[in-house]
Image (cartoon, rainbow over all chains, first blue to last red; front, side, top):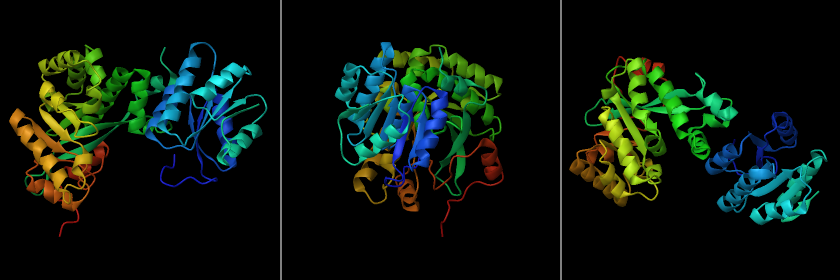
Length: 139
Length: 259
């Protein structure tokens, strides 16, 4: 992670959290090819530790928002929001339940992206948020 | 069930050990009297950075597992150090409290590595020590002392510091945080704070080490304040045991860039 330079569009620092090994390998390649500086985490606690110790511009978290892990995922969002008001938080989820999306936004997520539509919608959403639009649910 | 990252940390080569020398500042040329063992996670992971490594361990509530792996790595590497250097080990307060067999583990591991326990100093991070129940912390510290181990209080002066913790834990050594040390040459309040810790250390019979010496001016001021021991990038950066031995075996260090 490059923590010495101020972020620009080209060097915006993304923390990408996903428990799927294949996605941790492929999605960062896609994001890096579009000019983002990507750090990858595979566990909630790893992402939490990175957020505590490093500066990021965007948290892009694939959260399993069902069962017990839902609460841990929401706690991470809330902690990230409390720790850095300027951090952009994009939650990726397989759930299309609007109550789940609303819970993410209530805890501090700027946007919720439903997975399955490819990666371009994710990049578009990140760019839209960086341009100043916040607090909406994209699908 | 341990996560994949924890499994990697506890693997034989999961944690790499490097050492930062601690120098006797009272007489030039300065000599190394001890080294602080520092842990680095696997290089291809985020845990290669020590602050992320220990924050991760804390969040996973696996401090004891990680501390034990770190002790193994540091004491294994310490076999290559010059034998009269003491070895400092950073240990979470939660490990000392919850892992009631940690003192036995430490003495057994040092014995297996041929390192006398009289050379070992357990550094307790002050700001994390404040998070545990005092009575149980004292019990844990007593287990260490009963095993013949010395205890240091680390990060003294960092953040919201707790003087009561110093009095309660009766450490053998106080390590003054770099946030108090850096700029001591030009800041009368910092100078007064370091002097106050030195006076306190003398009163309780503890040694004092200052951390984070990075400028010649601060070093000169610290010597003027009669601080006996110190470490910092001005004197030496962390290095592997073999690198340190090679660099310092034949000659003590002379403070760099001194006319």
